[in-house]
Image 1 (cartoon, rainbow over the protein chains, first blue to last red):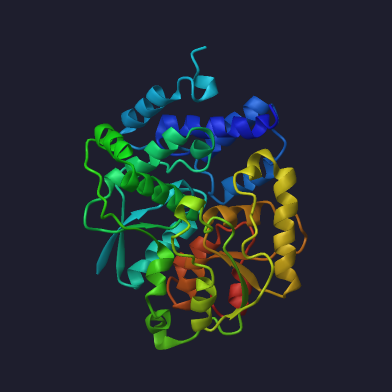
Image 2 (image 1 turned 180 degrees about the horizontal axis):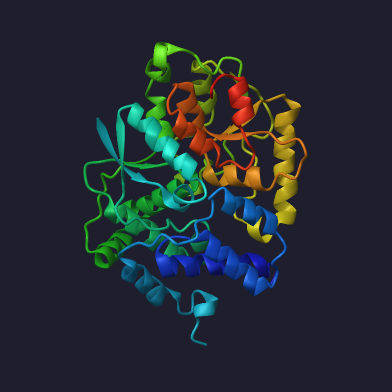
Length: 86
Length: 282
């Protein structure tokens, strides 16, 4: 894969949407960093953003999350590679 | 008071909350009540439409299905605006998409729904008439407008309105001096900022240097994503404050006080020294 980091970022963003209906940026960054095993890049920026409350600790969820989850269930198999059955 | 439905989107609801709060506050002062779309979800930008166009369409179209009839839907984030308009266009022109929409959301598609960017409201108003004492408070402020590329339209939306020049027009009417520069539509790097900061940092540095070269006091932008990248990715010693358009308009109209300070304290590049020197902030 030419750009695995970009792919992995998209993967985490979509995971967040599937779970909450909206993007939870702190969790996206943490999961992305965990997958990449790189905690140092942007560590200072991340702390600054937390200090400025630009990253929320808790996600904002939509109430009708079942509808969003269903979208991913119906659409994702075979279209989003990591959801593929094969 | 005019009532509009309002779609904030994920960035304005989190990283750019100061943009959201200043916009709602400004519009209230202009006699427009923004009513947040109940239970809105992510519009699908940029990851969904990069990876799976079907999910991107469904995410955007659910938001359209939530909009009450008879009330235009106002959007502040240029990227969300494109996603929502793109879904609307598909629904308006493709009967099978409409059928899918009605089956999925259990509601009829409202082809009369107007999806508008907040510029369109500002363009219709004489903002100076809303300023306290009709004072041109931005006198002496040299600024560059940064539209980024998110207000540029993809081919399917090529007939939509182009907003370039609007920030200059409105800011000038409030006393500020627009400065010409080469970077008003230069891409900020958008979502690449996370995965490829090695690409985005030099792009952002070039933009900030460009503002410095024309002696601009600040950069004014209408895109929350661009704002974040210009602040976060600038590695230069000499930084330039970046203000949301909604913030600077609130300052120009003499609104806010303690609220303005709260918005401005969320910036990573502190704009307060400049604004105090310009007597826009106490």
